[in-house]
Image (cartoon, rainbow, N blue to C red; front, top):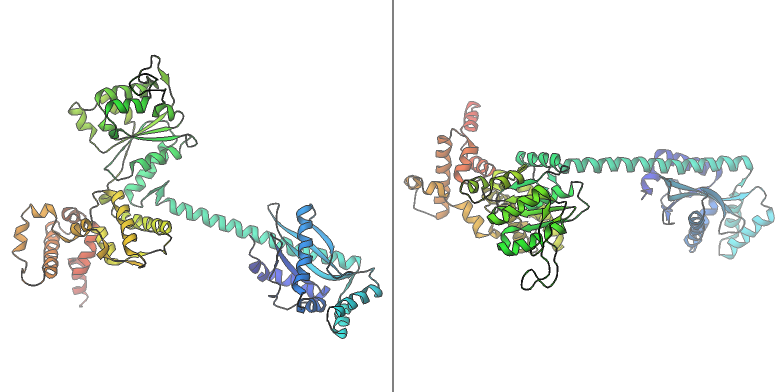
Length: 535
């Protein structure tokens, strides 16, 4: 849609409008793509034509104008003409209309009127005066207004048409340039946004950027992909990203959790069965491999499959054939397989629990998803994404996290990874109710407990020695803060001020540790700089 206010305010448009008004005594009107007159009362110079000024001051003036506009719009819609002359509401008066087009599509029109033709007689002019008087206009005003309406000869008519067409072209060209610029801005925003996400996977950390880079390289291949990572890291989302960025994106994507079925049931679910194969098999049933033919099959928790199932999986991966339960003839499919597991398959191979040949067949491309605690810089990005999503779903104004709430969320180790974080954010939105700010008192006990107490590693490694230096009198809050300062100070000394190493020892994020170091003034380098400056 054209922004007509911007178009009317263009220097070139104003200049042309002024010329048309001063030289020809015509008013220039802008009509939008739906046939509505725009900015009729917003001309910087007022109405140019005394006739049009009287018309628009009448109580029915806008209705008369709308009748002309509707007539012009209908003619543009029903014909292929780009410009034409039309009979105005008052018999004997005329106007000129020129369409505004962008990429060959009608986007509006420019109108210039009213005027008389060169052939208009004095008698016809008097009829217009009489009509205005009938409608309540004073005789002298009507006479002056009609006398000011110009008669157009051939030369002047041609010049006027050229000027109106220039206005129409100027509007169309400028709108096209604006549209191109906005499109480019959207493209650039998309490029910037894509740095933080791949399909529906979100994260700006270096580890996630490496994952995106790998996925972009393997998505178009037909290689089998193994996705490894803890529960809740988003393995299925990665599988979907691979599918929907591959040549198979228009075919089906099927996800199966292998640990959700016992061995016999999984056999039937994956490969299907024929009628009568077992009690209850009353008809043929397609398995997931056959359903996913031409598309992608995601086998989650493949490490939980039995040795006999692993043999069948190896066969279909190598040869593309399988045998439904109870069938006597093999069937062939074309399926891209993406696998995932949270188990250490190499350890399982050493124990004889997983076939080595199957491991190498499914592990052609390995995508390792980092745990959330290994990419703490992604926590705020994910929090904002889940917050906006939940607020939109609930029809609530966008909420914000308080600084203290964010700090505690950053300190939590998120054993449930992204899934746990999403659940926590959704919970906070619900508990916050109408409050715009989300405060730390709403956090779940598991988050509060993991950020407020002594880490397990320190409790089991001589943590009691620290308590000797802590004042056990007074409030618990003060004692915990004193313990926190002591642990961080001693830890910084022990690690040579390696904050990444200490954060890992303490079980908190590096960003959370930095916040605490700044809060308690424990950075020796910052203190030394202040001392050197004489503060």
